[in-house]
Amino acid sequence: MPNNILISNEFPEIDEQFIKHIIEQFLKKLNLDNVEVSISFVDDKTIQQLNKEWRGKDKPTDVLSFPVDENPPEYPYKILGDIIISVPYAKRQAENLGETFEDELIRLLAHGLLHLLGYDHEISEEEAKKMFSKEEELIEAVEGTI
Image (cartoon, rainbow, N blue to C red; front, side):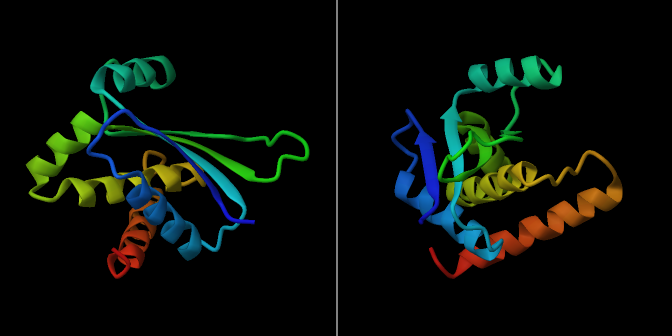
């Protein structure tokens, strides 16, 4: 059974087929099959509200991840969770870093997916190194496919 990638998006500049391709490549690299990931593209106000509610930080951010711990019984997919990306924040960040918006989206998708899988760069320096190394592996895995 193929993976189930759900996208919620109101931004015309987001190419949903591109996003699905990137996530599929990441899942392939991670040897994950039959999983479900939800990705939402939102504005700064929405992500700020979520950041405040769930992390106690009253400011916008680039990406948030909400892993799912338990699947509904007999659901055909292993639900990994939700990745929320602020499109305006990602655009500003790409510009500040001197990279393309698409490259920034790839990085944020990798980062968000790794959080869903239990990686957390905020735990320790060692965990941060592990997560950012895995993030680079994922990014490199898609470079030849786009």
